[in-house]
Length: 401
Image (spheres, rainbow, N blue to C red):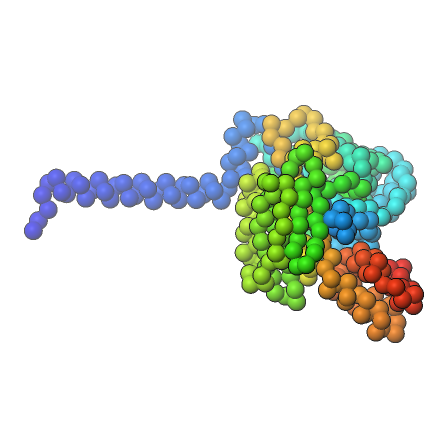
């Protein structure tokens, strides 16, 4: 049967609507893929600044953070990054201001905060980050001053749209994935000449209290909010001999206890959960992915730990920031990581110390398994050991790290 005129018109309208829908779907996909530049451009030429980073701590038996040496490990940064060792010679300081070194024991390792800048035109801004309860230990590009409690880059230039070559070395590093965003390149002029980078980078160690207390007892992990600005959600993650599992924990009640997660999941699944949390907290999609790529081999290593997004009010209190002129949008997304020392880890260091003939060999074996967390694990084990000879051997593991 031939179609009538009205039926023909109905078919044509349907086809037209399908084409419009497909076109709109493709447009929406393009917008989603480029949400960094689209959101930044809607600020009518204004400045947009985003930041991410990590606060890493180790929970003691009472749940609160313990002191440890968070930088007691081989550096994962390129050699062009400035470190505190060069402060005495003014290295990395744009005006050659001399500074003194400082102690490395702390409660928190502040890992890789990076500041991204978005603008539709070349802009000069001044940037300073204070750290009242901490010390800056690494940074790039060069800064005007690194003080007892902060870092001041002085004036930097935001250079959108330019093609630039950033410094790079042959060996892999946690540093480079942070460049994989749509942020504008930066130019910093100073004593070391002109330097270019995709972000402002800094690290440090701190002695401030984290917002959560985490205790472990009888295969259950209890998480308790300690501050007025509550953490509403956390992720409990475990990797045991390559098998991983995680549990999303609701903390809106202030305190809750959770069973250790079943080890039947994957790192990819958890990465998806964390990416959604980061985007919901204010990061652009590419920024969230850059953060996860940066820490994928560290966040998900052997062990039991809690992840959470630090309340913004706490971030601003711990790391007061000054950007002039002030940005129209400033997002600061810091992820807290609390390492939980398990009974298995304590037994492992005691067994290694008891069975090894050489403290250096035992130290190397434990470092390969537990990395920079060997010292707090050994300190926890020392609390449970009564044999003087074994205590001495455990103490040697710390002094030879």
